[in-house]
Amino acid sequence: VTSLTDRVIVVTGAASGIGRATAKECALAGARVVAVDRNAEGLKETRGMIEQAGAAAPIGEVVADLADHAAVESAVADLAQYEPDHLFHAAGIVIRRDDIEDVTLDDWDTQVAVNQRASWFLTRGFCQQLVARERIGSVVLVSSISGHLGVMSGSWVYASTKAGVTSMTKGFAKTFGPHGIRVNAVAPGLVETPMVRGGVRGQEVDDLINTNVPLRRTADPVEISRASMFLLSDAASFVTGATLEIDGGWLRR
Ligand code: NAD
Image 1 (tube, rainbow, N blue to C red):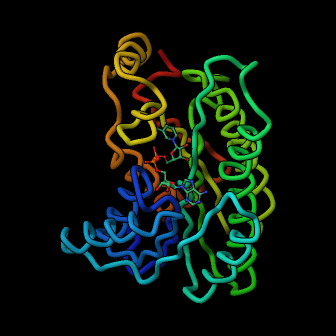
Image 2: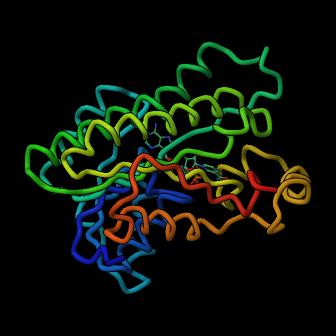
Image 3: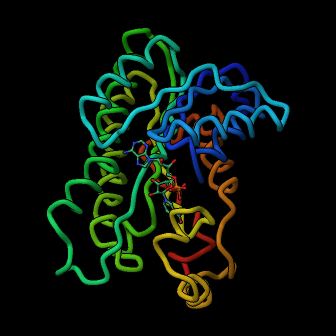
């Protein structure tokens, strides 16, 4: 029941980190992947990594800046041709400001546009297409435990966008549940990706781990992928509106 074999899955943020790992894991599990990112070069690298792992290359690649609403709209329209069953939305950014008083309007708008507005519009479009095709499918959005904590390493606006993602997950679950469509989120803690090393500096990562993470390490991106694949798959057929924390125990310590 955990199988995603032959399912079509759209993976955003597929040019790096968690999105890339998930595109690869899904391909290895026999899914047909449509990779989305603003970074065309990174998507090419992801394709190479998937092929090198012996899995089928993505059936589609969509280069789109999801901070731009017109681009999100056209991506939603573009994606329809692949008749996707699943959406894994990992594209996101963090703009670090140590002090909330240093946050600019531009910081706010950019992070909300990518992390929150794109989550809303992509999920809405994807679910509407499923309903029109009379298909049952599922979505996993990528939130963050910072959405629960309120802040993580100076990422104030980021944290609030992720709280928004967790919240909209429940709204989508309620709206599309009557059609059999499930919408869940994952809330990772610290994951070894360019984002965490770029956003949280040097020694600080180790300090955060030692103070907060019972498992005393960061996650490998693939650990987020595998938990997300459970939620996407029929193994989680009665789970919707949930946010699964994948944080090495941080919130439970
Ligand atoms: P990453 O920086 O390695 O990858 C993010 C990907 O999103 C990149 O390929 C980037 O090009 C793409 N992206 C960013 N802005 C985009 C835009 N406007 N349009 C299209 N694509 C865009 O980061 P990651 O750590 O893999 O993060 C993936 C998701 O996981 C994010 O939503 C992030 O907030 C979340 N997350 C990460 C961590 C962590 O510790 N790394 C923790 C919690 C949540």
